[in-house]
Image 1 (cartoon, helix red, strand yellow):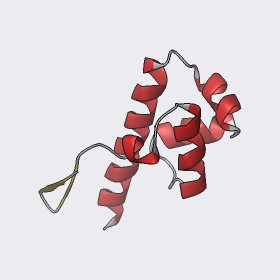
Image 2 (image 1 turned 180 degrees about the vertical axis):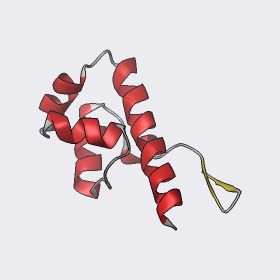
Image 3 (image 1 turned 90 degrees about the vertical axis):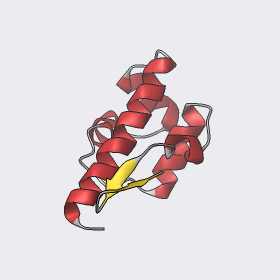
Length: 84
């Protein structure tokens, strides 16, 4: 995966997390508090600025009452091939 593909993956993951968070009517600070992470970390994750650690993904999933698999359920493209 090249840097552009990695950025696209991170952005897609961040958008998915943000969408689910908003579906639960959580603000960024509220979800961060429940997930026991810093709110600025969650902001960076949602904006696709950082690579998320698996442990952080699990914390966010638990706070959103879903599985990490649910958060990773999105499509993105690598070399013009859709990946789901």
